[in-house]
Image (cartoon, rainbow, N blue to C red; front, side):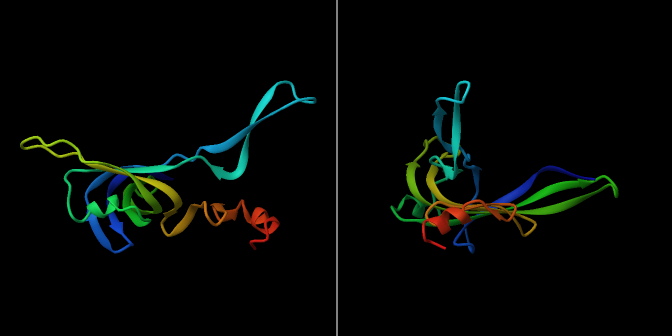
Amino acid sequence: MQVPEKLINFRVYKDGTDLIGLADVSMPSFEAVTDTVKGAGLAGEIDSPVLGHFKSMEVQMNWRTVTKDNSFLSKPESVNLDLRGAQQVYDSSTGKFVTSKLKVVVRGVPKKFEMGKLDMGASVGSSNTLEVNYIKVSLDDKEVIELDKYNYIYKVDGEDWLADVREALGLA
């Protein structure tokens, strides 16, 4: 039995290659856009999700200090980030720990930059918030979820839930 335990560590890269610093990251929530369905034939109301459509999604990175390597996140232009992590998994059949790869690719536009606080001998605590328009999560090089809001792509475990929508819109 493989027991996923914890994230050992991770790093943040710009465009997949340039390390931009040490951060803790708050990942986005996938909250569906909904519309209330009510009327004859229903015993009440249902908030029905719109297939493959999600509300505003944010990723926030909290930095120890402000540096030239992460200040580019304040420019009003799209950025591509790779969050690469190593996860600890316990293999109960062998009694050994196994390392699992986590990769999160995020594309978005900066929407908030907090400078933090200047205090002697302490972390500044600056942060950047991006509006996410693309995200792909892979575990051990296998795609788990992909959302591309501009190109009508929403895949979960390889199944593309918006393929029929793209075809209906004449995009396929």
